[in-house]
Length: 302
Image (cartoon, rainbow, N blue to C red; front, side, top):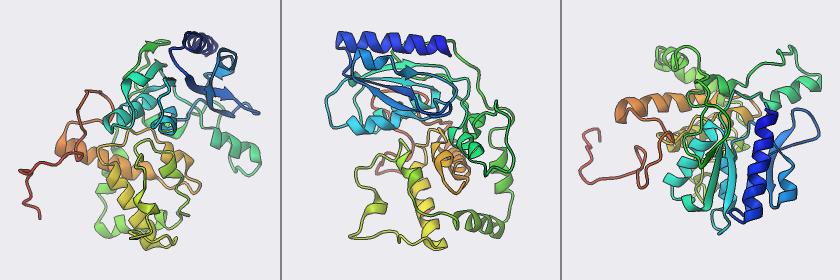
């Protein structure tokens, strides 16, 4: 990955020096080997800090929301899932395409720095092999950028092995009571930290329903009822919009299998309104399923 790092540094320096972009978003190496973190380069000198390695896991497209009300031209490095996030922002009219210079990098699969941090803490019962890929990457269907101005490196094959919705079908085969008991158990551990919301590029509402107090739509207690309401409402808002970057599940401090819920909705949306995959193709003016309303929409189910 050293060659890719060098090419990213070279590209960022060129764009910043020419004034084609005002800021270049990528990754920077931190204090520890696994501490690769988002970085904002503002000049040629800072571009030398940019890296790309096996811990460049963060979905950088989410950081564009910090600049949506500005006028800066932004350069950004994207993997496959990151690029789907950019498509998501463009479709939601959160960002303009002409403000972006997108540098695509095919992703070989990342390692999870949070797992590595836990392993080094001394609390881990079993230490996985150092080559272990992040769980979210095991489900990746699109490791290659779907939108870019410049591509660095060669395209990669899908990382997903086996049947895509195997776990979903196993869940669907359970009875209603069994499913309820399952979700009651896993969601009861939620501490309502909202990390899943904060890291999600599709959660781009300026005022979130869960922050509203007048009226307060959902209670803020960490009981099963309020927890279920929070996750059901949030997942419903992601229907047809989740780009499967898996960041919500990765950052969850209590390991709730959030992508199990999201993939169930991804499967249903594709069956009922598709075939459709969120963020795979950008067409100006196009909207995902459930994002439009027509007066002649069928309403027999009401």
